[in-house]
Length: 159
Image: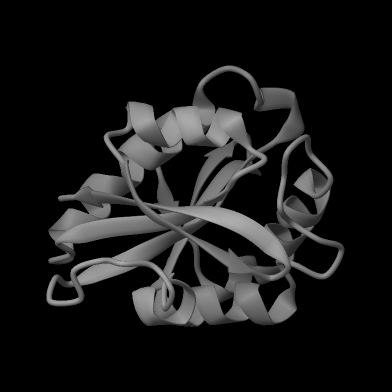
């Protein structure tokens, strides 16, 4: 299984540079301004950013946010302790090799060990590769929503 390292505030510059390097990837819902400095600093302050590091370089990253922040319009069981998996990203030179699936698969046990009962996420309706990845990781569709001027599918996996 892929080894993940929890990122620290000192990693903010490297993480932002990594995110900027993958913006514009095919089917990505990311924009020029997202994710930005505030997203990175918020994730790091919560201890929510994890990465796969190879030879000192981030080659994959994944984070979480509180469900209430992103899934207000999705029909999910709010009684479960849950988070929204966010910012799943893979370096361009590692894309197309199943690394996103490995990132998610390595991240879910970390969440479960923290007492999280359900992992949820939003995936763009225009990103079939990500939809396939999340389905392979055991996520299932629980609804849909329109946010940030885009259509998203809401998915969930009980842990």
